[in-house]
Structures are given as structure tokens and as C-alpha cells.
Length: 167
Image 1 (cartoon, one colour):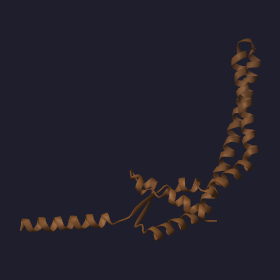
Image 2 (cartoon, rainbow, N blue to C red):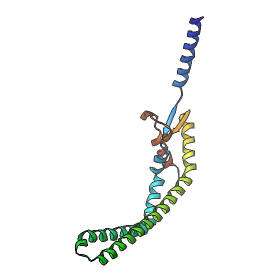
Image 3 (cartoon, helix red, strand yellow):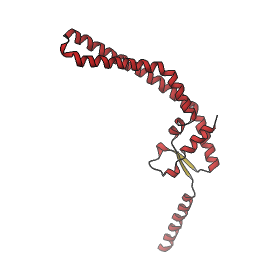
Image 4 (tube, rainbow, N blue to C red):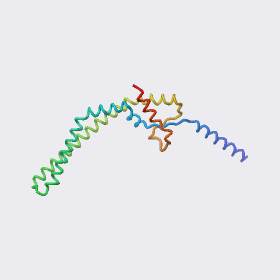
């Protein structure tokens, strides 16, 4: 009886291993695939042009703040208390202005990136579906959900290639 049970258990294990061996699995880094595509490169160039003025404004305020800070360090010993206070207030105002402008820019860039992701999502889904059908994958998982996978399971490059082929 014990021998029969062990033989039955062994045959079940062997059957499950052979079924698992036939399963074709892929792992994709969707974000990397999306932002490595030609469409993403064009989007990045468009964003650089669109936000160049705001970025230059943020840098100008940052440089101005650095100059005030350097002046404070260099001349603090020879300044009067009122001059030091005035300079400290100016520096504080520059810091507030920088934080405000930087947050405004970051929010605008983030919104644009989210829009790009939302408009590109159907294309990525289409590419993944085509990849599953053409290469007979049983399972494709996002990289974020996988702790470890061998490089041979990574299909990100194929997804990028197919995304670039779409127009």
C-alpha cells in the first residue's frame, strides 16, 4: 500500500514537472520598454522644448540663491547686523521662489509623463498581445512582480522593437 502511494505521488510530481517545462514564460519591464521606444525619445525632445523656459527660470533663481549664499559666507564678518538680516531675508525669499518654481515645473512634467503613459498604454497592450500570439507565451509578467528571473525570460527588447515598428 505504501509503495503504491509513493509511486502515485512520484508520477504526479513527474507529470507536473513536465507540464511546467512546456510553459513559456516572459518577463517585461513595461516602463523601460515604454520610455526606451522611439515615441518616448520624440516625447522627451518635445518636453525639453516645451519646458526649456521654465527650467531656465528655475536655474536662474537657483544660481541667484547660490550667489547670495556665497556672499553671505564671504562677507558675513564685515557686514552690519541689518545687512546680514537683509541678505538672509533675500536668501530665504530666493529659496521659497526656487521651491515654488521647481515644484510647479516638476508637477507639469509629471502630468505630461502620465499623459504619455496613458496614451501609450493601449499600444503596449497591443504589442504584448501580438508577442503572446506570435511566440506562444503562456505567461508574461511585469518585472516589478518578479523577484528574480534569468535574462533568457526578459522580453523587454522585443517589446521595444515591436513598439518602434508601430506608427
